[in-house]
Image (cartoon, rainbow, N blue to C red; front, side, top):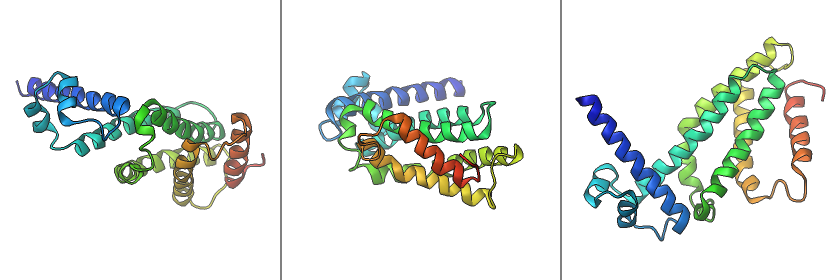
Length: 201
């Protein structure tokens, strides 16, 4: 009985989160009310407030939902049976592209990306350790394969992670790519990362 109730609560929460995401995307955060969200989800306002005390709480859950999707992609890449150099490059490029895709897919929230960046970043801190561990695993594979050379896997993984993270905002805005085609960008990124890991590319 308890498991059925938990499943119902979880389903209700997911419906409310998705309704909020749809409206934030369509109308923007400022032009969406809690009443709008309850109506979109076909739930009562009381039900909405039982699960989420404020619109900001819903925004945070929407962001977490999107971040979990990106993390699932990165985990799948880390588990691939390919050489570590291919894996680390796919990880880096996929992470940047998935962040950009998420921002663009969410329509009106794109305009609020800079405004909400600190909120997004505060939520993402708990994901940092997970992503750093994934990168560390790839680096250790590369060392075992005789591909990578580095002194400290923890330090190197942390540097790579926060370097990618620092590129996100300018990458989303198109400030990194400019008039450069994607292949050229990827080639240069490959040189920076793999040379840093001791490869001759």
